[in-house]
Image (cartoon, rainbow, N blue to C red; front, side):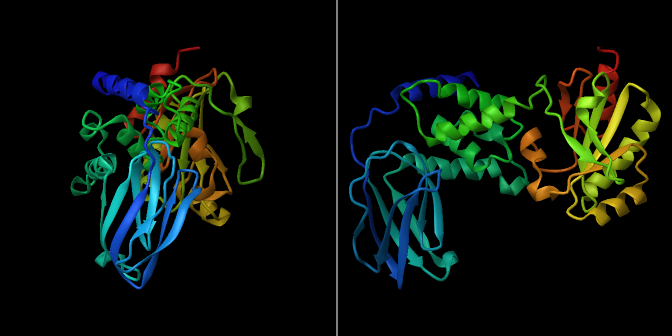
Length: 332
């Protein structure tokens, strides 16, 4: 990590010194014609044109900052890191069949590195996403781009976000990529361990509303789940065993359903015989505010809130739930 941080600082100091102008040159084989578009992270279109078979296309000179962009050629979309130097696109594009298309983007080494980093990070062969495989092998711009393109995965990675955010503390390195990293870090800072938990109010099955602000002085275990989530239902059984063993007046369990339909929640709640406080967020899993509020993208998601309202633990599963409760039970 120290090696990466040093590289980040050196790159940050050097950023913004380029004086050349960006230009995209393109000559490709095309069946029909295709649109070519370059957009930034705010989805602003920097240029848009039509490429015809074998004809030269140029974007003209553009002043751009070194940043992460999206290049679209027909159905083909590429995330690229560009700076104020020209790039050349060659290859073949079938406007109706992306799988038979093949393009090469030359003049952007950082884009090549980004492609390689994404391949290693997503690590499809092993079915896992692995930050450790890339954190000491790629430049700061590439690492930041991997994070932004997979922001849902990094929502809880506070140390990674902090490291990248700290690297952009220099005024010489201000672009949309650094701004997006800053936003992710600021959000993560709100739900890191020790942060003040944001209070919420939700209804139970009878429509009675319950607020965590009224539960101060007690440990609060919050479980986000849904009836359609198999691992959630399995985890619910584990929680019930733990609850029966260590329940007490100083401890509140809350299960929050992210079901889209109330009847699905009620049926699952009755089937599982949930003995503690059960609430429902009617916005559903896809639209719930809680994913951003507490930084999770998958359920079950279980967190422990202390008697003072601060987050004690997050992402708990199995026996870790019991361990964290017992560890913090006597802390005032």
